[in-house]
Amino acid sequence: MRAAPIVWRIAAIALAMCTLAACVSVAPPPSFAEPPPAWRDAPGVGVAVQRDWWRGYNDPVLSELVERALADNTDLRLAAARVAEARALLDAQGAVQWPTLDLSLSAQRARSVGAATGRANLSSVTQPQFQAAYEVDLWGRLDALTDAARANLLASETAADSVRLSVAAAVASAYLGLRASDARLEVAQRTLASRAGARKVAQRRFDTGYSSRLELSQAEAEYRATAQIVPQLQLAIRRQEDALSVLLGRAPEAVPRGRALTEIAAPALPSAGVPSQLLRRRPDIAQGEAQIAAADANLAAARAQLLPSLRLTGTLGSLESSLLHGDPIRLWSVGGSVLAPLFNAGRLRAQVQAGAARRDQAVLGYRKTVLTAFAEVEDAMAAIRYLDEQRDQAEHQRIALSEALRIAHNRYNEGYASYLEELDAQRNLFNAELTVVQLQADALTAEVNLYKALGGGWEGLER
Image (tube, rainbow, N blue to C red; front, side):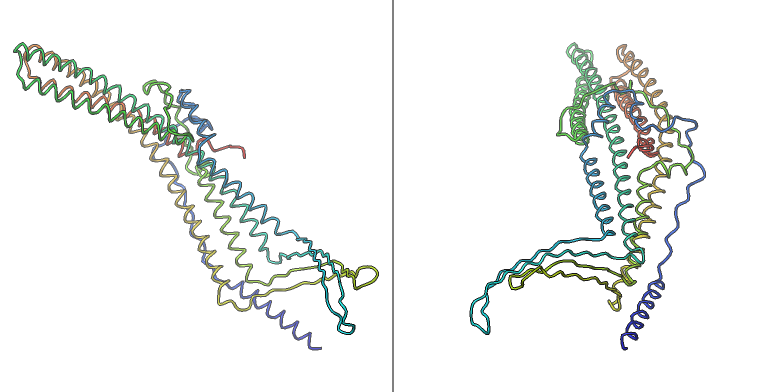
């Protein structure tokens, strides 16, 4: 008769725990980032963001390098391994919701002495047994953990897509930088040949008495200054080749070349659309959304741990012994257990608060990712606009300095000006030619950055 009050006590405790779990205060998540109404430097009507946007540069070698990197890059393989891990963890978590069935088999052979007879007895005992267990998911804790594992898998997949996009953009930028270094080396070698000719002229004029040793020394110094730049550029090219080889997943080696920098076509400008469309294009933003979903599911699972859990168990087996005669004895049992947390010094409540803090971190991380994405698109579009203007001005400057050098050279040959005037014109033209090459590379790279910022190469990918 005393069992009934105990049952009522357990029920009252369980009800109190449910009420306590419901009263756990969790701060609301931070607000999300609102997209701006429009871009500050909208490029106007453009082509749709293509998956293989790097082909727009019309350089077969560039396309081949990007595709080779997408197949062999180490970071991409590492991302694929993380996806495989997340998929396996999802399968493992999903299996927790199913009953477990185990088989145990114990066998024993013993020799003992009978107390009454004093004789030795040999006995053999075997006991096979099936054990089944199942946790009833009363409060959805297991479902929440499965949802969290599924969201983590999606986050891993979108992270792999983000790595794919970054690798493609990194290879394209590195290749354009390599071709720019090649172009600068050609300018330096061409200028060095011109300086060598000027040095010969200065030597001949000095030998014949038409000029002073000062002009010869100036010509020699200018030649040596240009000669120093050539090995610097050769070292830069070697380092760029090594970095590009690592992106390709290979040991450092020579990188094939395609079109010259001036022959590489700028791809059609992509359509940026409205800022809100960026939220569906970029894989890192999708990854942030999946991380928020995983954090919410983990928070729900942590809350469910405050509530009682119900576990059903059952066993079925037999007992066979040499001391028994006849058929083996059939053994079975069915039961259940309720586990209600009563006192744990606030550990479970602290886990709930930690889960809420991780949820807030995921939301704030998502907000930062979105804001960064908007800024990257704006920066890329502004770079395209202003670099085009700067490149045009630099090209006009190069043409003007080329004409200035021609005039200075003629004035020097006719004796109307000193060699210093021609020397200054040579230096200015050399610097202007290097600037034009750099701006050409920067303008092409800016479009790479725009495609990357817009999520090019990811939207519409098949999983």
